[in-house]
Image 1 (cartoon, rainbow over the protein chains, first blue to last red):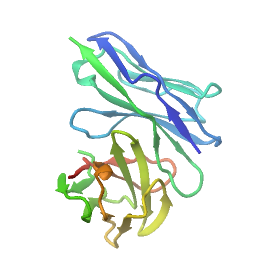
Image 2: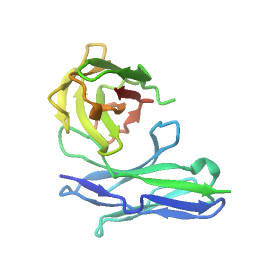
Image 3: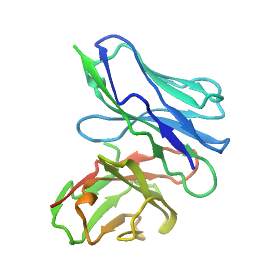
Image 4: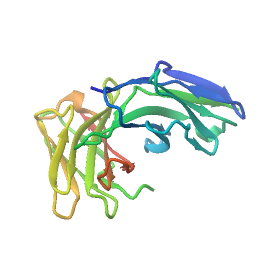
Length: 116
Length: 113
């Protein structure tokens, strides 16, 4: 069974600074996808970034980038130039690519506060 | 707006009752997933349907059931409700392949009193 661990229940960052959220995972599959989702106070789940396990290059989406260390099963999210709108819960998730279901397994989340 | 709709937004009901949550996937998506988000269990996968057929089951209680209709909308039925069933229930949809994204609806907030 796949598992996801987020060891930082809460973090804070000054506006315009950089913050890194940690995530480790475990899976027996060789083919899988990793995701970071953002959940603002509205509760909507918003996909921030995704990483295919077979790709060595780290994914980047504007101010958001990941550090994917496959051997260490680590998948951290870096937010650069933090903005007030980045304040939210952030969930790390994994999805295996085996035949059949593609359900997401989530970590417990990290609550990010942005200090003006 | 993800294109996934869920109704109702909020639901308040008493213990022992039965409720139905509804989800309409994005146009063209064949797969529907149901997730439960609660304070103690976090976000967990309940069940998946693909083109009308059950594809996978997660941590779904026997009191819960779901189905996907020919028009691809899905319903999650929760019966004999307990206080611990209070949670945010998300529906997500995808095309159904291994590479595509899941798009989440806004969720239904269920409160059992």
